[in-house]
Structures are given as structure tokens and as C-alpha cells.
Amino acid sequence: MSETDKKPAGNKGLQRSLKLVFVYTVATGSIFTYVSYWDSVFFGYCGSGTFLAFALMTVAILPTALVYSEISSMFKTAGGELIYNTVGFNKHVGFLASWLIMAAWISVPPAVVMAVATFISKLFGLNLSFGTTMIIAVVFLVLVFIMSMQDIQFLVKAQATCLFANIITTLITAVLILTCGHWSFSNIVESFGFTNIDPSLGIPGWIIGMALLITPYFGFETVPQMVEEGDFPTSNAKKAICGSVITCGAIYAIFFFCVAGLSPADELLAGDAANGFMTITAMQNILGWRFWPVVYGLVSILMGMTASILGFWMSTVRMLYSMGKKNFLPEAFTKVNKHQQPILPNIFLLVISLVFILLQNAGTFMNDFFNLMSFGCACAYAITMVSAVRMRHKHPEWYKNNKNVVKGGDFFRILAMVIMIAIAFFCTLGQGVGSWISFGVYLGVGVLIWLWMVFVRWKKTSVVIETPDGEQEF
Image 1 (cartoon, rainbow, N blue to C red):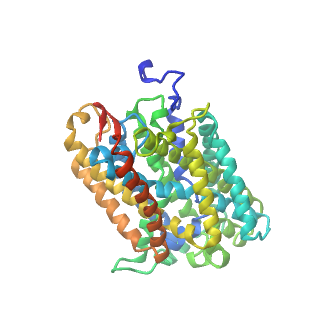
Image 2 (cartoon, rainbow, N blue to C red):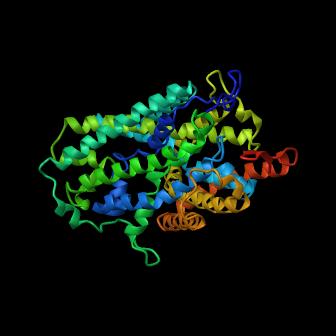
């Protein structure tokens, strides 16, 4: 990185100071979460074959990750889906794709803090009311907000610490389970095809369940949100994008292979275990362990989920900041504090998260909304893959010196698109009416903002994107 690529110290925007390893940990920490909370959901989807489903999903996700690596290396500012789809199509598709991906990101903070509060209640046998659980979640959310307003170096180092503690503890847990003396491969064989999802349109429930496992993978797309603050060539972003997917996919497959051998899936999901913390419950009830489940839970739930919430929080804030910089939102979204943290995007995300927590108390809105993260994410990926094909044909000169051009050209890009469309379709088969209502409400808010931009703001000023050819208006 040359001195001319760095922003002057007095610049009011984001500063280039992040090492590549921290951009990798932001993505990996975003992806690697819920492994000890959502484990009951995963096993409900794919039974003891969950480890294979994760292995297959890793392979399915990698083409998209590689295409992201290709196009992200050409742009130096935060924005990701906003940039790629505006350049590939137009500003309207750019807005849609960014709104879809943020459907997943924005869901994470309120869901995570509620999970943490629920775990605290379960760990100490407090039997807290929903109202008390919600208060704990709100306090935790405010603490995250305060952290998010601090220097980026503090944030990424805190996230990296939480991430690696979670990874190490998860792998130790896998080894302990595998060598506990109770583990048996016959348990895996017995419930390999287990699933609680009904077949739809002739498609087996297990396949639908595997498609829904895209949710534990979304997060690698946070890398393009951090490149504006990276002190490394954007071509190196591929290491963070693909590295995060492979790291998490490998750990998912190893961990759930070990867990599957403890007992048949229906026994692992018996009773309260079906509502979350399946592995922790199994260690306690099946193996009779008392100390290690607490240690594993504290690290994996508290630290693992903190890593995730920080990763998605930072990414959402930077997407909103980018939307302000590129005239998709008011310029007020670009103002930063003394630590170069965007002020209004942080406040906006805090308010939205608080609203979602309050809505949980009113009904099932948040649960339904959260169920559609996989669908919104897959749709955003699919649209971006189409944009990648269009961009390659509109600007072939951008690819001449691109070290990350995918092998196979358009065939590979189209393959990634087809995989994402298939996953998005399978995800629709696993959703209920409430989920579609929630998704409609979320899209409705986006449509209102989009209409305001179309009929008010964009009539006065244009969208401006920094491309390899310099700034261009759209």
C-alpha cells in the first residue's frame, strides 16, 4: 500500500489501518456463531447427517465466495453488494441487493443478545420471565453499541480474541465428545436421514434443510465492507473471504460429526434440547458432565456470539455509511466521531435492534423475520452473481490485471448464480406465512426509502461510485 493510497490523518472518513488478519477474523467471527445454540435447529434439519450437509454447503458456497473475491478486488471502498449491483445493473438493483443482505445482518444483533440472555437464564436456573430476559438483552445491546463507537483497532482485536477462544473451545469439545467412551458410529447411521422438515414439491426435507444451512455461512461478504479500512492490496481480500468459509465449514463438519455419535438425533433433540443448546444438554444429561458444559457454554455463547454481533454490527454500519457516501441515503450517515466510527449508522442500528427486541415481546415478528435471513442472503448472492457476469462483459479491461479472476470464466459465475438461486428456492419451501409477512414488512420499509430517493433526492443529485476508471455517476 503506497502512501498515496492512504487517507490523510485529518480525513473525516474511515481510516486505512486494518491488517488482513483482522479482516479475516471479522468475516470468520461473523460466520462462526450459533454452533452451540442453534445446534438443535441444525440437527432438526439434517439429523446426524448434519456434518455432511455442512460439508456439502461449504462446497456450494465456495463458488460464490470466489466470485466475490474476483469483484471485490476491483473496488477500494465499502459497499459490497451496493457497488457491484449498481455497476453491474443500476442503482435500483444496487439498492435492492444491499437491502436484502442487510435483512440478514440487521437480524443478528437483536437475535444474539436475546440468545445470550436466554443462556444466562438457563445456566443459572433463573427461570427469568420474558420481560426480564428482554431487559438483559437490551443492556447487552447498549454495551455493544458503546463498544462499536470505539476505535476500530479495539473492535477487531476484541472480536478476534472472542473468535479464537470460541474456535479452540469448540474443537476441544469435539475431541472430548469423540473420546468420551459413549460415542458410537452406529448412532450416526441410525438417524442419518432424520429431518423434521416435510418434503415439498417432491424435494426431500433433508435437502431443504441443507439449503437452510446457508444461514451459518453468511458473513464472508462482510469483507468488502472492511476493505476501505484495510492497509493491504484489495486483491488480498480473497484470503479473508475464502479463508473464512473454509475455516468455518471445516469446524462445522468436524464438530457435528462428533456430536452425532453421542446418540440418535431424536434422542439428542428430546425434551428441552429441541429449543436450543442441544450439545450442552447432551453433555449434561447423556454424559453426566457438569463442569465442561458450563465452560463450553460460557465461551461459545458469550464470547462466540460477541464475535458475531461485532462482525455484523461493523459491517451494517459500514454499509449504511457507504450508502450515505454514494447518495443512497442522506449525507448525515457519513459523519464520524473522533474514533472514525460512523455516528448515525450506529445509532440507527441500535434503534432498529431495540425495536426488534420489543416486537418479540408483542408476538412472533422477530422469529419470523430471523427465519428469512437465509432467503434474503441467498437472493442477494444470486443477484450479485448476475451482476458479476454483466460487469465482466461491460468492463473486460478491469479484469486484465486481476489476480483473482475465477477459473472457467462465465461458466463458473453462472454456476455460482444457479447454486444460489436453487438455495433461495429451497429456502422458500421451509418458510411459514408469518415469515413472508415479516419479509414483506421489511421490504416495504425499503420501498419507502427507495421511493423517497427516486422522487426526491436522486432528482437533485446522482449516485456516485468509485470504479477502476475513477468516479462514475449512475
